[in-house]
Length: 104
Image (cartoon, rainbow, N blue to C red; front, side):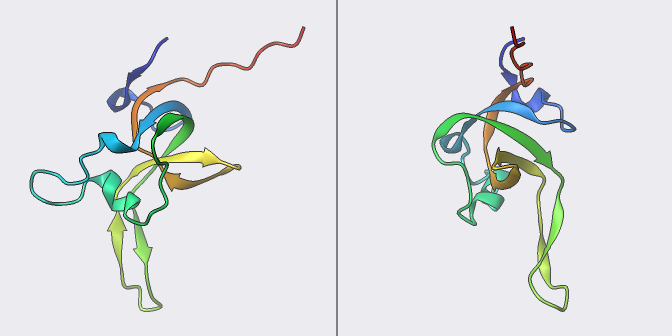
């Protein structure tokens, strides 16, 4: 099974992705930030392009104060690094994570 468009990716398991930060236009035609750009604005994103393991995270409320003020962040993909998913990634293609090699 080769690379497939990210739109066909399962959202309930980790997957191998090809990411490309520059592939996102950052703004929709309406002038609104894209979902990826909404996350990448924080500066914590995978720059350039390459391969990584990623996981889908659902939309959530980002609280900014003790009065529950904040904003909604859209659902998006995050890269696995050091057993954590902290940096947003802009995948364009995906494939299942291959099985590890068998010991001889």
